[in-house]
Image (cartoon, rainbow, N blue to C red):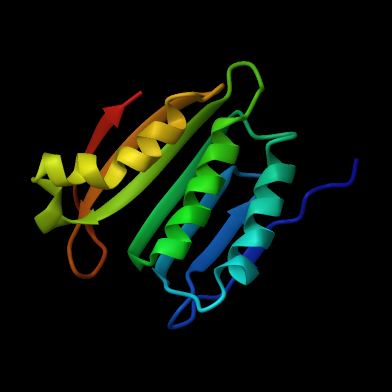
Length: 150
């Protein structure tokens, strides 16, 4: 079996930074995601994730720190989360880290609505899943955090 290479894509005005690290299990997607052609950006990411889950790290951290994403991006993000939720290795853990502006952090009903597609996907996970949310200021500094689902 060939070794999976890390994936790194620079952020642009319309596409997110993507930093997928096989050795550490740190998977980061951050910035803005409003690509004109979402499959061109997200298909290689999903392919990488599908290869990763064949031999995942014991703990996988998916960090979604997106200031804005369009509907097409949300569909692909759900596919990525669903693939990771299918990790089938004993004692593996998937932790989803999701970042919100601090002003949204205290409105738990809005956060539940925003996260309901993710929670629906992970409700049938074969791996142990933790969900952490972070409230950030305009510079991205974390001001508050909470574990809301394990």
